[in-house]
Amino acid sequence: MRLEGKVAIVSGGGTGIGAATARRFAREGARVVVTGRRPEPLEAVAAETGGRAVAGDVGEPGHAEAAVKVAREAFGCVDIVVANAGLGFGGAAGDVDEEKWQRTLDVNLTGAFRLVRAAIPSMLERGGGSIVLVSSVSGLVSGTEGVAYQSSKAGLLGLARSLAVDYGPKGIRANVLCPGWVVTPMGDRAMDHLADERGVSRGEGYRLVTQHIPLRRPATADEMASCCLFLASDEASIVTGTVLVADGGGLAVDLTEVAWEQS
Amino acid sequence: MSFDHSGRVALITGAGSGIGRATARRLASEGAAVAVVDLSLDGARETVSLIAGDGGRAEAFEADVRVPAQVEAARDGAVEALGPIRYLVNNAGLVRMSPLDDLSEDEWDLVLDTNLKGMYVVTKAVAPVIASAGGGAIVNLSTIEAEVVVASTGHPQVHYNASKGGVKMLTKALAVELAGRNIRVNAVAPGPIATSFIPGGNLRSQEAWDSMKDRMLIPRVGEPEDVAAAISFLLSDDASFITGAQLPVDGGWLAT
Image 1: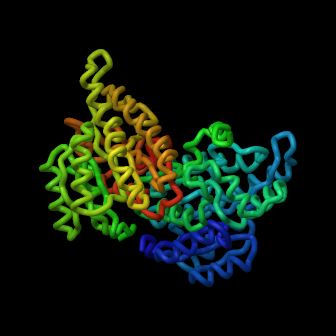
Image 2: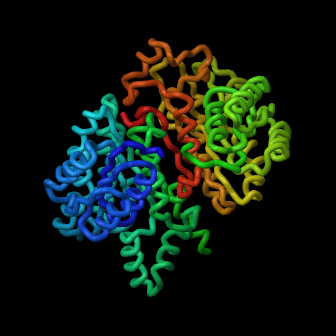
Image 3: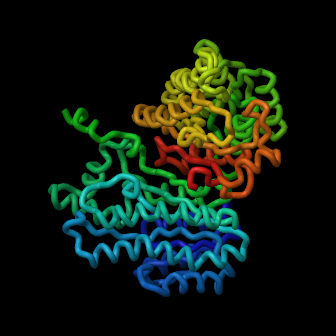
């Protein structure tokens, strides 16, 4: 029980990495507040974990405060924030419309910032806390035509370092998880798009995008939840301002190698 | 018990003291049987008796990681005594500090051979055993000094920096090559950790803390147990999608 007595807020907690993280945290003794846009999956996760659900949009002002209020009223405080809510729109810088750019930044970056900002007073009262920002390998290296997503995910790295510097001396740690491809509803949508283009199945889509990474498969949401758990827990009590890359080895490979593999 | 290593056999080099010893004790407390390998058999035996005192299982082996025959003998002894090895922690290493003008070729070779070649020697000996056992995980000890030169100490150590920069890339290359044999390979990069690693240095002294406190966002020096916790995580099934990564355990040193 690595999170005994801890209270955690997990954004994007209705599905995917967020839901898996909420479930894992609950099994490790934490009381969990999950937030997300759609009430049904959130309520299911809350019921399953004995936690609370706060439906709302992290891109909208007021949502973060509402989540923290529920956590404090139900469980007394906030010790851990996993800022996981995210979305993605395609588009290169010359093509993406400004509304989509803004929406991506509002949810992926400003949403994380707001959630953290709302939780900091409670963490300071508790004498410390742990923040995990779920970024992406896209925060470190760029895919094609995703300027808003790439920029928002890179922004999370700066946010974490800034939090680590400003709040480390006050007991709050902040770290980033950078997953590669993960089998989640968001991953499924991306794979369906690829599958449509190529005339293949979703599973074949996942195979195509992971065929050159060392582990040759996408991650499960549970595998990312266990990374969030390590960073959130006291096991990582001297780990802050860092980036944990959990990508099956993808970033270790120079993808120009692919030319040789295919020849 | 945080991570479940029951039934797994771990071989740890440099486990007669410091981070290696803390890692050996931690893995043993989580169910692993540990082959404690060290240049000093006395140190290794002391670690084993500490583990035995905790109710764990371990065996001591003497080996210089630079010498393949010694490493292979320790590996064979470990397999015979404890069973098929699933985890390897390449921890053995040393630091020397000399300005370039005074840095002898012998000292350069000592540092590079121990810190970098030693990992090649040990991994080459042990990886096939891990692969035959169905796979497992390797953690290499890197350092924040694989990323930055800590010049504030006024003790130049180009050979140490070079060796650990090599470890960082060795880790990635091994991760790519060994993935097909179901072996994950990662590194931890400790910051200042209170061990006897630095000759003549005492990281628990006020003087040492004053020299590092501006870089330590978390206001304490690292303990060997902090690094052991990160190693235990990276070896565990909780890290099953992590390979080729380097995890700083540095109090935030690299973030500033």
